[in-house]
Length: 565
Image (cartoon, rainbow, N blue to C red; front, side):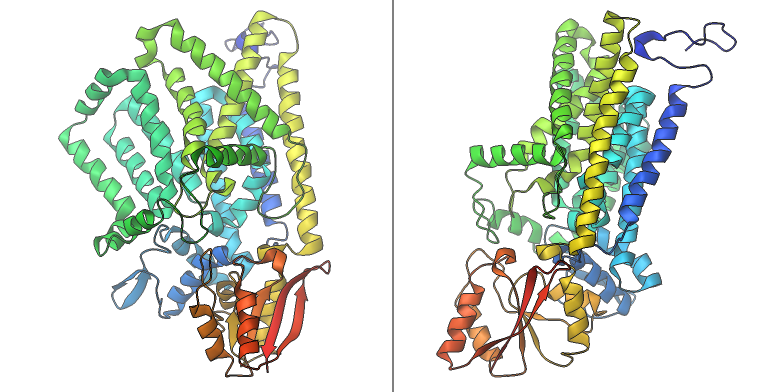
């Protein structure tokens, strides 16, 4: 930038950064940040109760509701403090972060989908602010503006964060904050930065165990740049007092998970039991090549603008193309820089930071194919902000390289046009997704047919026992009825149904007032239950009667309610 008072204010700046008089990159970056926050918030808050509440989203919300009501937490791992039962974990591998995050709005506004999702939109806003801070520190104002603009309009980010309990969205700000503090510690060696990074790392792992994936690129990038000797010297430079403080900070972040595992190692036992073939879905971790390929294709589909789980429209895969080009460009830059001066690698901050972004993608995607549940692009949500930061930095690198090689041409306009087309395509996709939700109320396990069901069981079918014959009924109905009505699950949450399902059905069929809740076949989560149900009724001489078929807003069948007489 020219100095203040320079007559050259309108000149083309170095590295292709053309700025008009009075306008600086930081000013534009701040404008883009504010505009991105507004656009994201508008989309996130639009008809916030759509799509319908899904059971995993309701899982933590119901625990939060029970905690607020002082109700027994059942099988939820908990601890009693001052006479109050407080949750330690949500499941064996997910901590209580979103449980406690949900409590303030639920306490103020009561049990509604809007109150539940509002706070997760706030988590999305925090994520964008942290991404902007990290991107500006690493790549400058232009990189920050591009990264935030592309992330704020990214369909999966918009729609997944507002239903954040399903994706444990606090892992996003935890990951960005951890990386930001770790990078500051490498520069300043301040103990508080190291302690803060490790605390957020502990919070991330407690929130969802897959957060440990982030340790691979975070450790590998400086190790490759410093080499074994330099890495050992870095470790030795940490004073004993600093190491103790950092260890305590990590333990504080991990506290709920540590407390839970001290009495039985439940998380470790869960991971070990599902290490080869998972119990819930029959996913085979030994089929490594196909699993990795599936995750890679799924992540490209995600970057292309698909919301994956909502059966909603997708736009042109412009984002996937830009991501592939950014990945290639960043790889080329790193190879050239790596070969240029091997002695400068240890002190080359740009090399280390870019290498971290590349490693985040090329290590976490294949690692995610090994899982104790099942593989899904949804589990790669944690690396989405870093993927768009990589793209943004690669765009700026290309912009600067072309401006140096071919000066005087409008490369700034070309770069802005590429980013604007991508963000515009994503925004159009978001509009189409919103229209899809307005028209249908959501599909499958994300349908607001469950809201209609909750209303019916409170009024028309009040007092009748409810049996959930599929995943996706019990917890969301319980939450929507303020914990008063809790359908009992008779199915097995596993790839194959056991003989015990028939025994449970036989017991329930003694009561002719009972109602049985199924999804239509195309939306059924655990197949085989309906055959067992009908065979049991036939064996007992009972007649199965369809009470009602609940539909999505556009008329497509979703939920079937049966009685047995």
